Image 1 (tube, rainbow, N blue to C red):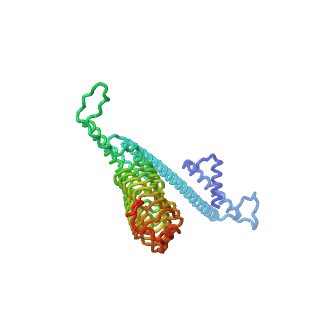
Image 2 (cartoon, rainbow, N blue to C red):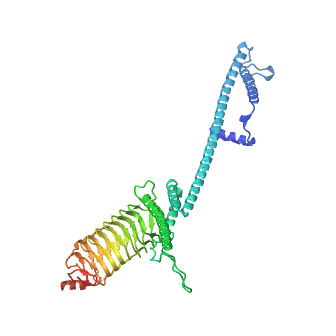
Image 3 (cartoon, rainbow, N blue to C red):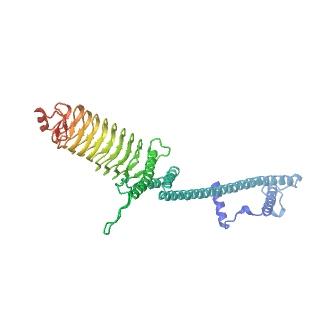
Length: 494
């Protein structure tokens, strides 16, 4: 009922041109109500007198007996009852007015609240625009600093970008991209010392070639290049340490969940130790060059993210994965070349995920000493044509270690003292062209070590009857006839 009355009221208001009756003058409202009350009183009095039989004779008599003379109290009673009814109606009217007033107050309050909310939202938007403008200015300043000639100014740009990435998550992605882009910039290695030159200029004769710089000039040029190199190196290593600090598991401001584009970066050292690479985090070092110094991934944990080292070149220095834990995700060295320097995976644990080592060993040394392969899959179809790869004292406990298709042409692959206690180590289809693989004192105590379809010369240290060891027929025949029992170096015996 109230809903219907409300709808009728709104319809009447619409017909009235949208006028707001609450704005009628107070005097007009009072006069209107007074007139209405008088009319109601008169009507009620007349009705009561008629009901009592006191009517004019020309109107005839009501039903029932003829009227008697009017008593003095009849008029007073009629007036009393009329005023009582009017008073009740007035009370109802007051209730209606109070209800309407409450509606107006509620409407005004809602309007005020909406106005306040709108003002607050506009203020918040203005504040956010101001913050965004300030952040953009900070970003522009930092990028400008990175392009400065002075190393100190560039370091200031690195720290400014770092703070901006930590404080403004919306800017983190672009700040990381800029820092990585700086590392991708062309980078010259440490300059060589100048060759010995005369300390003073030699007198020229007609027809001689223009003289080169003197020793003092060459040394001064070398010192300038060396200072520029060291300044550039400090800025680059600061960026690498910054990335390290934000990828550690206990980082105050974490940069996990982002893509770090380090493709083609030249590393002459850098500390990335103890970084944590979880799901959603990608380190892309495709085509990176490790040319010198010490680059450390020691004690890093790879639990679900991706590390691309495909086509990387290891030509000098030391790359350290000692104590790293590979428990998930993917680490990909496909197409990488180990041509010099030292790479350490000593004590690393491969317990999950996938690692790809479809690489070429042409020089240098790669250590897997004491590494533990206890889960996941490690693909190792490498080409051994130089250098040394040590698996001595490594443990193959479970998971899959896949050497199928590997080529052992020269160099050394040392499995001496390794323990094959579980899982699958697959050398099927591998080619042993020289006495490069050494399994002396290796322990075959479980799992499966498959040399089926392997070709070439019998590696040192294998023997018939070892638990889980599967050898091709021609190697079994060689062992039965007294195969190699001495240690080999290269293609010769010692």
